[in-house]
Length: 114
Length: 164
Image (tube, rainbow over all chains, first blue to last red; front, side):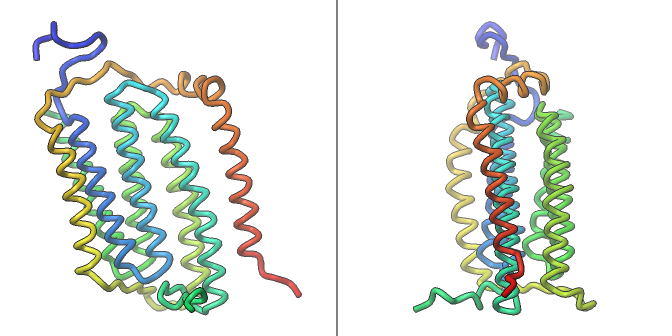
């Protein structure tokens, strides 16, 4: 692409572009998804959810980089804070389940089963 | 070219440690591999001109979440001394679902792969980010503090040992 065709403030890219970062985030997301579906321990599931949230954040930050918009970075910061809140409540629930069922296997938690 | 080399190294570390998190047998090791993933993510953020987010990532995730996770592991397993194992099953179903989602996402990404990529001149600017939080994003920012308070109160209320 010749420099004349570029919009103001943009430069041609030599290196991984948005697609490459998006693909990396997608791979990490799917690894996390695999963990959520295959783990039987509640803590293992929570770890995998962390991986998925992390992949989403990588995606958001790469969008911020390639759109040059700081608001997207601010959005990522919100997403990070939400993840932290989720982990805190999730761990409290894990401790509660441990106390109630004497273990943290997700299969044993069947109080709502009719 | 150096950009691609750095990208390759970072993705290799990220994917390997993420796979170790979801396939490992030892729960404590899984948590520590997650710490590696999260720290490498901070490096990625720094490379993508998000210095403040990189600092937040190290402080919050590795400082806060990993410590909390280790605490929860120790609390629920009672420091039995034995290796803390966590099993997984349904490899075929889980792997199939994950690969299916990856295929869909990948199909979308490859559609834009061949387009020429441009990048906007940008340097990390924590000052502008802070100004954004206190002007345009004031309301969500304050709502976030209420959410964090609610999460804290909720966690304490849930985990508190009930006294008769």
